[in-house]
Image (cartoon, rainbow, N blue to C red; front, side):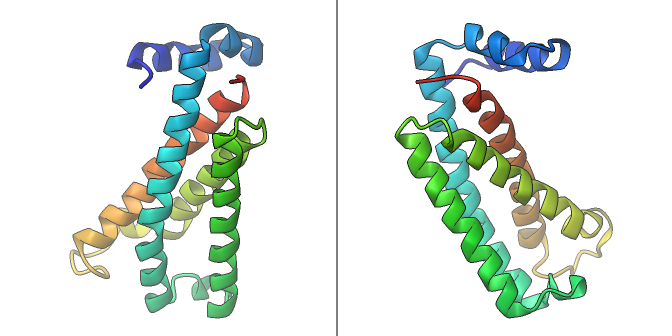
Length: 161
């Protein structure tokens, strides 16, 4: 696994350096690049595993119907999201440059979607919200895992194996 100090150093470069691709490429060795890509794959697989029971819960409670999305369309959207994540995992595992940005983008979609759809509920819903603490944990995990995938995808796209 990549040392936490390297991650902090990389994030600091993103915050203060306009020439991010070169800065990251010089910071990451081949082993560190491999660790970033492997971490991205693991985070994505966990995100998919966590998002599935949450999606089933959303289907049960009509989570997307308030935005005018039918249940059938929600199923298709979920299937496309998982297909893109699966493709991203395969590409990343094979060392293809397109893999990390795809997984990072999908992580950003999951994170942003969970914040927009469930953020208010996470903060202000009564204790009996949906399935209680389990629902809140799933939603929180999707936000954190999605954000983590987005950051790892950004780091992974700027380096080569």
